[in-house]
Image (tube, rainbow, N blue to C red):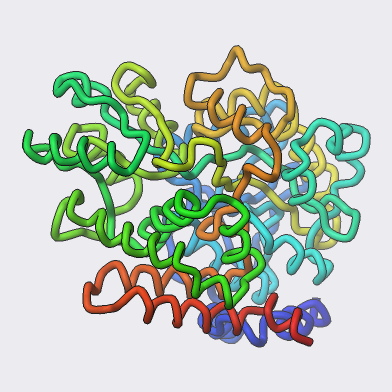
Amino acid sequence: MNEQLKRLYCVFKNRDWSWLVAGVAVVVVGALPPLSYGADTNFGPDSYAPPDALQVLHWWTSDSERKAVKVLSDRLAQENIVWRNAAVPGGAGVGASKVLKSRVLAGHAPEVTQLNGVVFGEWADLGLLLELDNVSRPGNWKKVLFPTVWSLVQNRDHVVAAPLGIQRINMLFYNKKVFDRLGLVVPRTWADFDRVATKLKQAGVVPLAQSSEAWQVATLFETLVLAESGPAFYRRLFVDMSPQAYADPRLAHALKRLRGLKQWMPLPLRELSWNDMTRQFADGDAAMFVMGDWVKGELKAWGRMPDVDFACSTVPGTDDYHLYSVDTLAMFAGDYSHQPAQEKLAQILMSASVQTDYNQVKGSIPVWRYPDKTKMDSCSLASWRTFSKGSAFQAPSLVHRMATDETTKDAIVAEVRRYFMDDKITEADTQHRLAAIARSSPKTARSEE
């Protein structure tokens, strides 16, 4: 493990040092960060899970997410394998990511972790992840999975993660009862949106729910970029990290629209969790909400029904596009003593029944190319049809780790929130700052070598 730790330091030495400092502190004092975990979790250095138990670190802690976890843990229990919950609260996995890195540095990696996006390659290149070829080959994952998902879970021709579901992020939820009461039609264009928002405000209803939490602001922003430019330009910004793209007028327009939407939001903005914002929307305190389809899962967990209490549309200008994130679980190899149980979990995650049941609860769609569409509601069917159109219509979420490395993502998210909250900052100034972040990103540095 010492050699792996050295390699870990080398890989991340030019990245965000905050988690690294925290990890070193963990190693020195022999303790973990003072965060709250599940009641059945023991992270002490003298605790070892039996071969038929898997500790799973994740950030699924809302009502619907806990129900989705129960789908997985109950199915695993049928194989006589215990799911040991290690849940770290916090939207978008900000806290869980830091805890994971600290635990690995301390030599106490979990057997399983939620690990979304492009960071797979970094962990796999360190030799820390269990390769799942023994499951993916006989399961014919290459044929079963969407090509985008199949590419995501591979590293150097080996499968290093098990995919669970695909989330659509460019969703516009609207309170159907409020819309019906006021005789409103869901907006398809931004001109429609402004007209609907004006009528809602005149009726004493907040048009658009919004938190000032950084990742939520940035989630709204990335949907606006997609609406303004389409997937090709979106990828130039957030995947290719082209500094020149950040000077494009389309980015300035997206920034202006982001700030312009503040007139329809509850002011002053408060830093509330996404599920707190969902509660406000569900209670009719706001008529619309831009957020990923995990909102649908939460609303259903509270007894609200699609096309009755609420309905799903897309952010104006994005109906043909799918801004996506993929839920995945990766396995840490360790001494390989847990490999049979880890491979069994991967097999379970990709089974037809779990793909259907998990995604019904979570609000997402299966990663299978040909799922059981009879089990999908109208929101899921629209998501599946759009994602099925292929990569030209897909955009990997920046905020949810699908597009670029963690440090670059965090810097962009912080800069976008700074612009959004401070009306004195100009679009041009923000564009210059974002271009500087792009120039310093690892991808740009490699391309210039």
